[in-house]
Length: 496
Image (cartoon, rainbow, N blue to C red; front, side, top):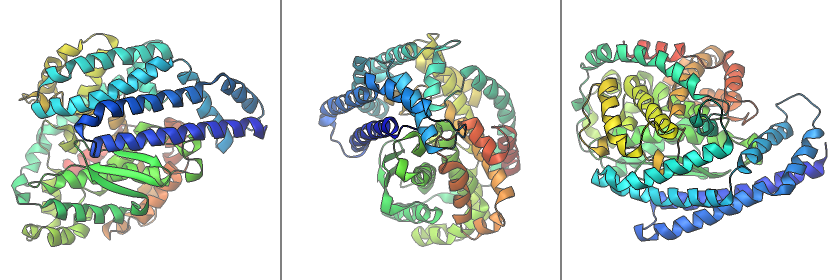
């Protein structure tokens, strides 16, 4: 192939990746250390960087380079790094050239300001404070979807950003089949969980001790702290700021250590994926995650399949007691039962495994209605509360426990929520396959040796990058595309 065209593309998209990672540092700082008075200027910084990246990757010459490079790739082997990059660059170029720079900059500016307003609205539990920003974000999201183009459903254009090729009608069908089966488990799982009251974990958990314990656990599962760190924020997240710079965040509750621990396990799962990607191709399609549903599978796998198992607490309860002496006397079974107990609750990030996906179905339905114009942003609280009552049987007490609890809409992440449940389905299927493929896996996990599992995930999921789309990646790793049966079997086996 013509190395000239390929190398020009590689250099241009690498330059854009450098600027995006710089914007990422500013975004991470905004969520962790930025003083409130600096938000407006930070919004201008991020808007400027976004506009610059957009211009870099939509320049007219890129189209010619893509045609020249693509014409000289003769191998049908989609695993070839160059073919993967060219395919990914073309997708990015086609989407980016449909968006005017003014929309890109306005989007960045609006989300930067909205994030700070959301945090204040959540603190006050007052949706009215956030409503005008949500209205603007929904309007801009519709503009983006229309610019990209869509056929059956405007929401599909936004979903495609996070789960390439996915269609909301298919997701809705999957959710419609999943929801009733999950709902049928809630009552019997809740009754069974009553044997392990949350009060078993009652006590004081100093933040410094939580931080030390969390770091020890994250390091044990394989998170590389020479290339990452953990900080504190309102809403836990993971962000990759470079090939050797992965940031995790969590939040702390001195009455409940599990909130920060499972926040770290979840985000460390994302971090392990980022750290397992091809560093030489960082910022290029061959070195980027396949999809958000695949990314989320890694966080849910480590959080739920590993971190909330009896095997995990057999290994880690003695260390937890070292940090939190009042836990002495609990058995691993009691610890697991108290941690994993099923109890419908208001906050998604603290929801149990059985009810979690009901939270996602609710969000998917609401934001799809917002983007399609079937729901006005002003009606979000009422729609949320009504759906929550139907799905989880609870009356939402206020906006902070309802429609303001998630940061995603303030970031403009419309189309994102469905990937959480897709991640749960993928995680269960991957764990099922790992037990078939990795000799002695259960024994190694029981002893606290997580390297064999991580090695398998690195080879099957992390290293390929965007070599395949999500359905094909799952087929390559497990022999079939994503199925719901493994997740339902996991829930029944663990909770019923």
